[in-house]
Image 1 (cartoon, rainbow, N blue to C red):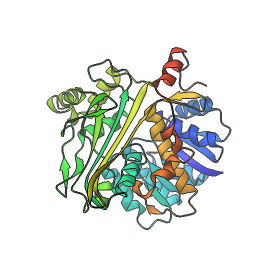
Image 2 (image 1 turned 135 degrees about the vertical axis):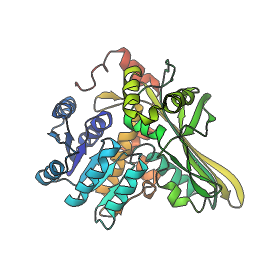
Image 3 (image 1 turned 30 degrees about the vertical axis):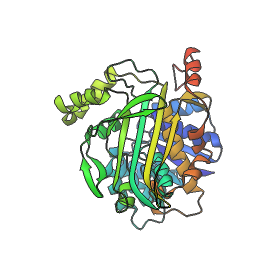
Length: 385
């Protein structure tokens, strides 16, 4: 068995540990600053190859001691973005592969420096966006002789919105605020620019449902660097139900809470509920020349909650966790093919979708699955078996 250490026993780390352990191919160690949280996840999963550890990943000495006492082949960080640089440094020191879910641009730049000259792989931005969206976009880009425009859009949304934000907290609140508040990278008229978050508002209709989309930070990953000299325009926008952007502008810009993110986090977590009944909408549009003709190709997918390892998991948990697990699987079993800094676009879409973990992106099923399980009362305590 390959050995992995997952840091963070939160919403995503819990499912990553379950996916890898359930496969039977990995010895999984789950570490968290809260021993209670790690033990709760392990107890709920009940896999003999899944082990809980009390690990303070913000303590460099403690993290290095964990990796020394329990050597692993890969470290997976499902921690807040600001913890990842320290984890990457520990991975470099111990000679283990490194993976994270960060959307933060500066953190990724720091990981790139740490990865310089490394014999092991450093693979940041392995989530949904950046992450899978970059892999899907790169696949379509490869079909064109000349590029004109690349649009990446992702929405993680409640199935049944009923508050003024038309939103539910389906993943990290800190990551959400970071995306809404930090500068965004884009390519306009062939030039890489820095765009303002919560701007560039547009409407998009998919399968009869109207969404709005607006600039958020980090979603392009490294695509702008990879294709910046070949494309006229490229941008990433988050999709929400109409009206959400105006409400977030009020909070973050008019009330200045972008400069008091701790207060904003408390407000959102106190007022906006979590839900397992969500949907992830993925949309990529690439325009360019094929055989001398102007054409467009699209990748469009909707992913709903799924039952994995005997329990219901939200769509954002499924897409994020299955994406990073697929990439981990491809690297760990790649025979040393990947080393140093690895971009998401270095992976082929078909390799991900046919992977035993990535297959969850293509799972058949709609909101009926989550609706039935919720009505039956089986979802109230996710950390209990």
